[in-house]
Amino acid sequence: MNHLIEARNVSLNYGKKTALRDVSITVPKGRVVGLLGHNGAGKTSLMKALVGLQPVQGDLRVLGMAPSTQRQQLLTDLSYIPDVAVLPRWACVHELITLMGRLQPKFSAERARALLKRTSVQESDKIKRLSKGMVAQTHLALIAAVDARLMILDEPTLGLDVISRKGFYEMLIDEWCDGERSVLISTHQVEEVEALLSDVIMLDEGRVALAISLEDIDRRFVALNHDPAAAEAMAAAHPLLRYRDQGRTTSLFDGTPPEHVTSLGERVRPSLVDLFMALTRNPALNQKQA
Ligand SMILES: Nc1ncnc2c1ncn2[C@@H]1O[C@H](COP(=O)(O)OP(=O)(O)OP(=O)(O)O)[C@@H](O)[C@H]1O
Image 1 (spheres, protein in one colour):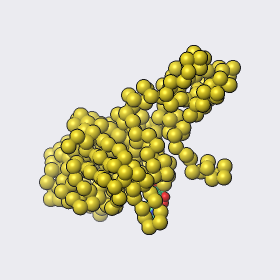
Image 2 (cartoon, rainbow, N blue to C red):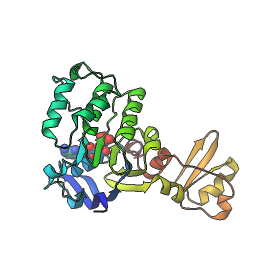
Image 3 (cartoon, rainbow, N blue to C red):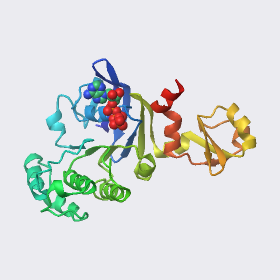
Image 4 (cartoon, rainbow, N blue to C red):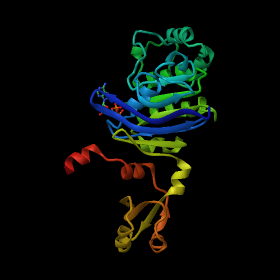
């Protein structure tokens, strides 16, 4: 098996509503993959399909297995945090450690305790008395204590403040990512996760708008920062997007523009946010324009 996730022409419908259309992606081992998309783009649907909670059309393999028919087997090697808080509010942290030990053969209670030491959560704490950030860290400590190969996180830091989000991602990267395991994270906080990611998948209305490594972004996309005087020549070369950046304009191209255009600007690194804006449609804006 070459890839931890392999999807070929995967589509998912809820009745007449199409949530995923012909999605083809691969995730090799040792990657930190961001799944980006506007509200309703299909991120949760894709993650549910990957963990076998939604049947799909097309060819989908996760850790070499078919998620919908081999779910139990798959879940011994795959960890998943869904987009809704699911830790039981009545339980104490140490009860959850015991429970996880019974449910998940690859769970290490010792490791969970070590991970919790990174946080301010005590084993005697009841979930209902923890802040949202502490619940998220507890959840991650429990999940990261499973010796799995793939972790799927659906908006894991939703509702957390910036310090809690930072703590969450630090624990994930320091304690779980080891160059062999991969993690797929959906988020709207594009700027914040950019430095963590090795790859990005952008969904737009159920379709893959871009699936690329961060290194390949630099190779493929060219952003030129230029004076207003160069605007006309830039526009004639059909950039994907033009945006204002520190008082100047940047034109973003898919591929290298012609030499006479390249020489009019200074090459800068396009941010993920810029690419995201260029390649995905914002439903709110579309409605306004319609
Ligand atoms: N159970 C469902 N029944 C019918 N339609 C659904 C269901 N779940 C999701 N959808 C629709 O499928 C599309 C994709 O939804 P999904 O939740 O996967 O998007 P998302 O990218 O995770 O959005 P968000 O960022 O808002 O969480 C949306 O149009 C949504 O309305």
